[in-house]
Image (cartoon, rainbow, N blue to C red; front, side, top):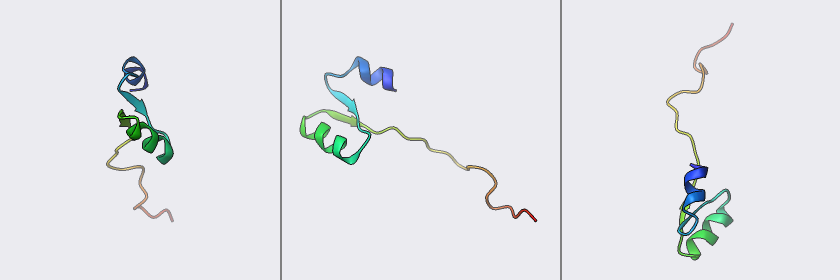
Amino acid sequence: MKRFVDRHRDFMEIAYTPEDLRRIVMMGKRAVMLGVEVDAIGNFSLCSG
């Protein structure tokens, strides 16, 4: 995603902070926020004991 945004810097930029997001939007560019979506992260529902 970072390489994609680098190729299209004329209209998009990655926002790492809320301040970045505001600045990018105020410049009329598309703000990209990086994230990960997962269904489960480990077995936290199981008791070890």
